[in-house]
Image (cartoon, rainbow, N blue to C red; front, side, top):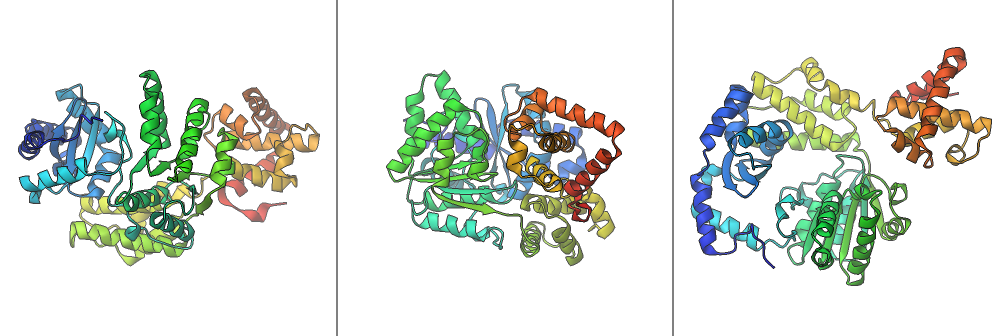
Length: 480
């Protein structure tokens, strides 16, 4: 088995170490261009810290000194940086980052790092594309996963699995976006890869490799890579929805791994029985293991996270950044949707402080975080709309989603569809699927019916307004 991008011998290592250390690419010209295009302030604060490491056929590897700087650059400036680089070499289509403090690096250390990372790494990657996979991040460990009542069960189950393969099999972890599912999968992978062969991949990448293998008539190798793992971790399994051929292959891979005693860990944004357009037999397999959820963080956990992240950033910036307890408490109280949004809020405050050379006061904090503060009000899901409408009209959800056309069911159903169309960004086919696979023309008819009724029926207008108020602001005082 040959991995063309790995450093496989000393001559190749020495050649690339020289490249790493000497930075042969005309990086200074690219830095000048970044300074001109993105401005001196942004360049000095963030982009100056980027160093060139290595270039392959169609991507380059850059280094930054900290994970925080990498995340900040990736989320805000990556597209512009890539475009600048493409002006120098149009074949470059992707940028990879390594966290590496260039101030302290020696050539001997680079050789050791390459040996450890590229040759001894126990995590599996598919030939010719290993850099495209969700590589295990050494910064996402059990010891820096903050625990509260909302995630304790998921944490304990993950810890147990990392100590005893096949103790819970499969382990299925679900929860909303930014709740720490990937952190737990990564932590499990870090522990298990010490003594076993681990494959960590997102469902989207699994699908990509599956399609690629079919096109290249190379399904035998695809099966070999995935079925030879001791542990398979798959992130965001909900993205397999509707892909019948891929689900068929996943089902057989799943069974093959279980038969040989391998551990399977899966994450998703919802419970197995809520997965849409996933084969029933796959959902049944997921439900047959241990299913645990991560709920929204409570105040105590949010406060713990804000304090931890603030202290972590203070280590990077010494005495430059000191977020007050008042601001920390405000963020912990007001931002409740997810852990990721909490971290994003802290990053914004840090950015404000560095740009304006001052810590924002409370009123300035509200301005900086205004869109995040609104997000918690507007987290509207179809399931929430259906639940509130059913309660409002005193019918069950099964009745609403049934094929029955009784008047006392049709109007609530049309109302729920109308509200879904107006309060979410879902497409007509997506809405139809959530209402028992109704055709998109039915969705259009329902919306138009309610719009016409609103024109001549004041009671309908009042009901719609009451329902909107409950859905958007959880204002239960208006229920009838």
